Image (cartoon, rainbow over all chains, first blue to last red; front, top):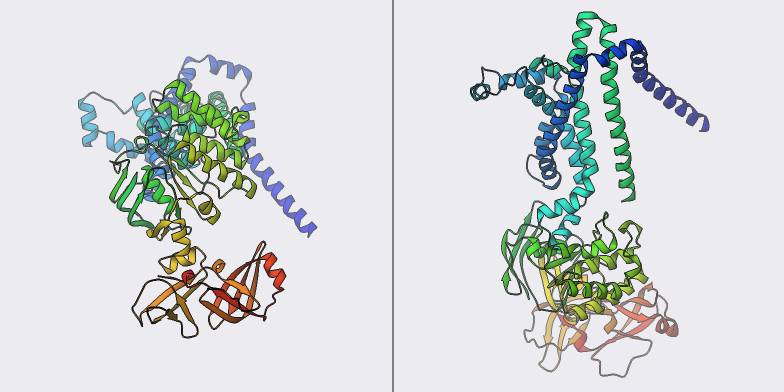
Length: 265
Length: 350
């Protein structure tokens, strides 16, 4: 019995090491490949900084939009049982399973000049193709499911009875949300925002269809790789990865606190 | 005070059907019923927390059916208490004051009174996670009463407490009810709660009110088989009415039971109930005014600590209740012959 247990433990540890190695090896290689001079040159390159900054703030905008629009919707989904709820939840998850270039093509088919919506936008002077607006649209499309699902989980973890009691004590629906629901779920919302922006910042396939220019960091990495090869694209890739790592570290710290709070409850 | 007329609440898997109920101002009213009978749903409907399909709810003469929960003056204390985990005890208790225009001095007075009555003063800085079950219960009560509700709804507030805390909170609830003058509407399964606190009781089953009455009426004169079963009347029998005006009997086919209620329809099939505590057990026939006395054999003895239930076959099987002391004094064993004696007035027809 003990021997069988030991074999099982050895198998799990080996599998774990394989996975960790699989993730870390390419990243470590990429981090150590560019020379310090190349990295310094990339940091000083205005185009690189501009593209990384563009990635950050368009992803941030996508996260803010997801927060504003997604929070009431996530609350509704967490609190209401209705016919077709599963269908709605599946629709929300769609952007996560559709191949990324297909997302770009789908959005393009709506905002392009061959479709009435695109024609209206064109008439009122709103340009989606090749613009920051286009990038934000695509990033919101791919990021919003992450926000809505995380926020919904947060709302679901709070007993509706807390809200019921608050209302019976005289608080309106809005006051109840501000005084009870929000203080108990803001961590989930923050985790959702970070997940949404982390997903958005790394988007390439859909962005490249809608807006090759202005160039986001992933598009620039691809362009440099295509035009000049691996060595030229690596420093930008390292810088972008560092930004993503900082975001994910932030997420881990928050989610750890989230777990602790759940345990206390 | 609270008047409910033809209330229907429709949920996909459950509904309240045509609820009619009248609760007087200052009553300690208890809703009694099995799990899943709709007790909590009825409380939530009164509090305005679930949509009402049909019917009306009046509180103090005002139709509140379409009013939001915050405008009804009704506080609710759930079974799980639902204390706000991110607020301290004091913040929890004072929560309702944000939304009610209560004079500051009055509010301070009420707060101090509640803190003293419920012995909460040493706990005010703590968070709910650091409170015991009894302490949480007291905080939930204080929070609900702080806003002077005209109605306090209590959803099985004592069910999760251990016996010592239960006794303590029961006493505090009764005292608070007497001193605040609010109407209390409580859901419970526990007969001790009812006997200790309730002024009136409604029995609810499968979303319908089965019977409403004072405590004695519900326990002594159940009007349906369900209520009789639920209040543990135990001896529920069926027979046909017979006899003359002076001596009225129910003939079960095996025994004849004399009863005192006024009914003259001979031959009519009736159900009747005799509570186990109304039956006297003896080893020799008793000389008394009780009209019903039967000799039977003890078939089963159930020990419930201080009390003992005896199943005795007297033709029909009857259950009697005696104290442990009586049981030991008579040294009753299974198979022994005993006399069961009860008054005609202990027989209740429904």
